[in-house]
Picture (cartoon, rainbow, N blue to C red):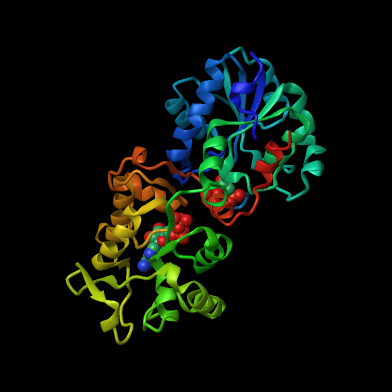
Length: 401
Ligand SMILES: Nc1ncnc2c1ncn2[C@@H]1O[C@H](COP(=O)(O)OP(=O)(O)O)[C@@H](O)[C@H]1O
Ligand SMILES: O=C(OP(=O)(O)O)[C@H](O)COP(=O)(O)O
């Protein structure tokens, strides 16, 4: 399927694309799972004696988090356990000089690819391959490695231009992400497949149900999206109250689709039976949905009875995929749904994939072990595209040989 790092000839000059896009605080990149994961690819290449130049992006021009990658080099070096040099040029003279000065086992991070004019225009790969960026850098290398699965839905020069002009290989992250995230569409499971869907975007849930509804036995819903499904099922929730801007717009745009999904796939869709809110003492309280007569407060999590309803479904599953949180888990009082479901998954030996930048953060926040899941994705937009069977342009180019 892909050529991998294990297929590289010895002592190559390797140009590598990572996704180190990270939260930024006070102008400094904050450590996150992406650094830790990509460190394996970097370490393997350095240990094998290749000369390694890394490309990555941070933010978008005009945004506050559009910064230099100098702080990224330090965080990456800590994780990889090898020195990572940095040059504040992507393909200018300084960059070329630094690349030519690399010895076997050296690692150099080039400046933010999005600081060049050639990176961002969404163009066909063939047009990107003709850009000055690609034409200047490519002759300095023997091979191109793409490890940036989480950016692989973007047709940017560093992702789609180089694989047309250099022998292209998939990095460790690329291989692991591709295999796990495509499993729902490609792998045959002996038993039930369950998908836990929540989060804030009804359209994500709708796309997933439409694309892979035929391969999933049960959808367990929660979050803002779950509340909208409850509203479509006739309960007086899933609507905005004072100061809220989460539901009504999504309802207008999506309620007909949600209603028909409930009609067509009702026996596959499990909805919350209770919801949690903040009471007058700022404590978590719960209410069964069949006694709610009017929405007069924000619901911030599914309730304990819902967790008890979803728990055996998960335990009886052969595979469980998670997309989106069941509640506002960043607040400990409203983490019961998300953490309860994650604990049930961790407790079984089913094949399990947890994705979405926010949801997977709950794993470390609440002391769960990544090792209890088959795969924890570092992708957001690319993960949802994989779940809905949409090809990722930069992944497809790696498959071409
Ligand atoms: N009932 C809720 N009220 C407010 N926020 C919620 C609720 N349920 C889930 N969320 C929020 O949804 C976010 C995750 O949404 P989303 O971006 O769709 O998923 P992901 O980032 O996992 O792909 C979480 O940060 C969580 O706080
Ligand atoms: O962080 C990323 O994607 P994500 O927000 O979907 O996880 C990627 O680095 C892509 O970044 P972009 O959405 O600015 O093109």
